[in-house]
Structures are given as C-alpha cells and as structure tokens.
Image 1 (tube, rainbow, N blue to C red):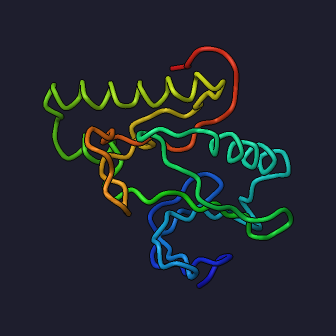
Image 2: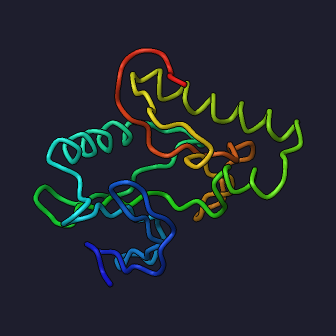
Length: 167
C-alpha cells in the first residue's frame, strides 16, 4: 500500500485518530514513521484535523534531539491526511516499564531527557498535552548517526497551547 510518496512496510501502532506505520520514502529510500489519519468511522472531524495541521506546522519549528522531527506531510485536501516523522527504533517507555522496573539512574536520565525536550517546546510556546509513558519512545533515531550525547528518549510532536505543563 502506498500513501503519498511512501510505501507502507508494517504497522507500528494505533491511536485515537490515526495509525502509525513504518514506511519507505519512494523518492530516497529513507524509512520513516508514517502517521495516517483514519477516514470514515472514527475519523477526526474538521476541527481535529485543523488542530493536527497546526501542530505539524509548530512542530516543524522545533530542533531538539529529544523531539521527533516532522519530515513531510500531506498537502491541503489530500486524503487520507498523513504526516511523515523521523523513525525511532525502540519501544514506548510503557513497554519498557511493563517488562521490568527501571534502574533508578536510568529513570532519572529519561526524566531529564523528557524534561529537556518539553522545555525546548515550552520555550517556543508549544505545550504537549499528552505526556505519558506510551508516548515516550526509548531507542535510537534511524538514519545518520546522532551527535554524542543525543537524548535517548524522544517525545512525540508536541501540541500547541499556553501555560505550564499539565499532569
């Protein structure tokens, strides 16, 4: 199956409004995480789609090793709506915690990395409204090697908003 210029390789996960796939960019062969919004029953409404597009625009302004980069997105009117994100090889923090308790030093490092990523988003006026272990990816970015010291935890694209982080 192809979505835009991407060949879908496998499903990575499902959320409320979208399915995320591992996909290959047919233009350059790069692998990405392709988030495809549902159509038909369970599809986001016009307001949710507008908010999602705005989130993508704002997320493109962020450059932080702990925040997944937006690489590409569907054009206005293209259906289904999709967004290509930097692919992270790894697992959600929730899966890691379910398998075994985290050593305290690792837990502190992950908390620092996530806080640093959120601070970078907050500095631009962007608020992530769904911070939870299932939305924190533990692993490595796929592609060119990352600079030493790059954060091992990556937050999904943040959500615009105002005010302090919520819990």
